[in-house]
Length: 225
Image (cartoon, rainbow, N blue to C red; front, side):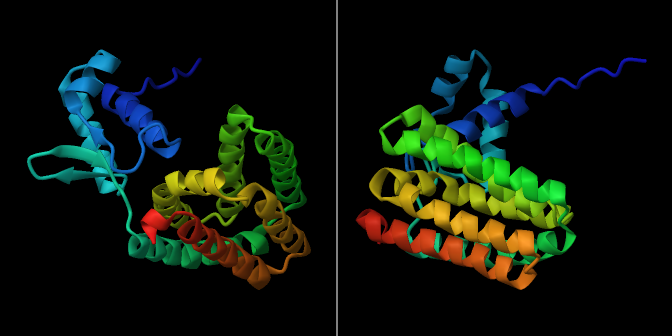
């Protein structure tokens, strides 16, 4: 018997569309999200748009402002530090467990992602914006794949939601600084220790990676300082 693929609901489609546009920077921090305009652009009613925005608000990606409607969340410097601190602790925990449970196939999968990131990074440093966008996607894939190895589904879900709040700011860092020149070495150190099975060190390096990224962002983006 052939299994039917589930079709996403309309609110799910709208949610995915808006979430992707927030994470890729199309809707920048602080930008108003007018329900009427979104509904018209997607050819839907306001009901699924409102449901999607409510879900995004619960995830910390949008905020409902009194009498002004929804807008993409704009984080203050203190909020960025707070979220980064949470990410540090969650990533360290997930990374330690993942390293203890790793297999040779896991190591190979992560290495393949890093190789692709190196290729895209070289193009991105040359000004290829499509390569930059693809690099960000691979960067997320690396961390998602690493933490999934832990087998801690609830932890990974919470970590994903927390990282989502920093994702737009990672793009700011890419545009304002030399992150593409520094990140590869950080990721390679993580992979090297993961391959060796040094669980505590992988946890430390993952936490350090988030901390350095936060510090660079706050130095490069004075509006958030």
